[in-house]
Image (cartoon, rainbow, N blue to C red; front, side, top):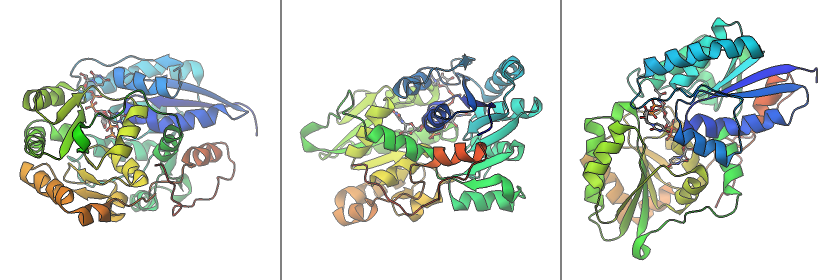
Length: 380
Ligand code: UD1
Ligand code: UDP
């Protein structure tokens, strides 16, 4: 390979770090690539948890997180903070992942500085600008500011082509989250085993989306309160530290029998808990991608999803955020083992664990490994 391709990988939040960790590791393995990592610090504690698990030490850290921050402030701090780094390191490529404010800020700062941008997880769409908010807006803008598009699935590629993105810049790679999941699932036992009472079934819950702040999170809490009255479930909920989530969840569920509220779990623990779960309730994007590989049914606490592959695989179901709908869907899966078994199927629509190899090969101008989307892997 010709020498000295300079690549700056930007991460800001928990999911970006998880999904970029395999890319950062793959870049480090290449001769002829100078790889540096920039952490925006949009998340602090949750980002640091991931950096520790994957042994990543950022070369730069903008440390922008503030309590109850607004996206516009985060955007401004990152875009301004990146300028001297872009001047000093002068990367050939800036790699961004997903649809957070860090991604939008970094892509804009890089494009303004004349650097080429590679977007990992390009082409996800709901076509509803308010849902998820502001992620749908961010990812559309970032795709149109990018020079290379790493689409996780064929349907993401099709979405990009429909928007007039140059076909030659779009590559279907699989989602790097499956690479990360494979690395972590192969590791030894985590620090914390799930503590589930008296053989009860584990319901694992996460929620954080901005459009779910206010009434929707209160409805989710009410649904969990009703489900916790059953004598055969234990609800475990690592609570996102955003005060718009943390406060209503602790107010509504703190001290409830059969409910354990936790700090965010590190990825090693969380993957283990997902494997042990009977059912996952979540509004997370990444968990919708991981659950099919683990064969754990997911009820998606959202009105829309940009990951229709999980629903098509039969492992995920969109249930929205009304308490009665959540309780009804969860109750069906708890009361009817056949319904549960029909959803608890392993599938790998999001990747085969080689997405990072493909991304780095494409960046370096090499032929990527062939894509085998039907391959399934047993992570149990
Ligand atoms: C952000 C992303 C969202 C992504 C999510 C992953 C945007 C607009 N939102 O949402 O797309 O799905 O991360 O989790 O980019 N906080 C802490 N410690 C942390 C992290 C957050 O205390 O480690 C608190 C802070 O008060 C912070 C607040 O949470 O101000 C909100 O963080 P922010 O990154 O703006 O939004 P998220 O809801 O985490
Ligand atoms: N996750 C974690 N600990 C937790 C909850 C989630 O490590 O307590 C992982 C999860 O497995 C997934 C990622 O965090 O890989 C998803 O992050 P999040 O839900 O914050 O963001 P999203 O994917 O919705 O952008």
